Image (tube, rainbow, N blue to C red; front, side):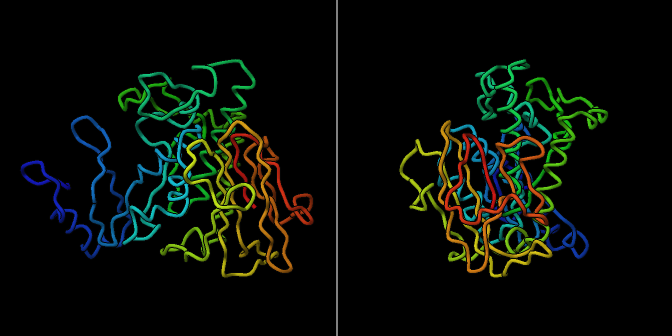
Length: 331
């Protein structure tokens, strides 16, 4: 759709433009997914959107996977969390469709199960053992990484996109090929894994819904409403490629409403290292305390808290929080 007769990329593809300004189609949700028809490889092009076309954000996918396996840069993660302004500056974060797995490539459970040399382009990590295993430590790490993937999806500006079947543990046995996809066994929705993951997804979604001021805005947040931190409230170590901790405070222009669990600032932390991080919490606004809503290091039901009943999760009087290795937390 974006190429001319000679295969060159067009700045104003006629069909794409016609759809964008069609009186009917322009009112629908139109999403571009830029891949080569020859080898199904991702193509990074300047896709014209005309404030009508959204786009699957492959850069979000690769940067999130790289960081969570301990190899990404802080600046890359920060850019994706804040709405990918380098890609959608003229459109806004609502046009960024964020994902970590999709209808070809490795599904979510395989991203934490297989990482052979042949899968290098998938940016996967097997968490210690290749393929199926009975090692409880590896299994716990894999489950935590799945929670981390879902967590980064739902706390990033943009639209979170889930791959059908990932909620019930769909696997291709480590094959990224589309032809190796098989029908989803929906009976697996009754497994313990699926029940845990669907609850986690539902809870993360419930956190976003009342926070349209931050997560569902058509516009990027004001610069003064985003503050990025290191673990001790200092400047992040942007120039240190070995640093795997990043925190950001998203400041709301709405006061916190306890009755409706609405408004108030958010504080989000990621620790992709193998070490415990002692996180210094920002000073809460007057009359408020920090409430822990999510900690991906905790197993069901501890990884989330009922925001309508914050007893036991108040950080009142606390100035720091112990964030475990390879984990994320939301206050």
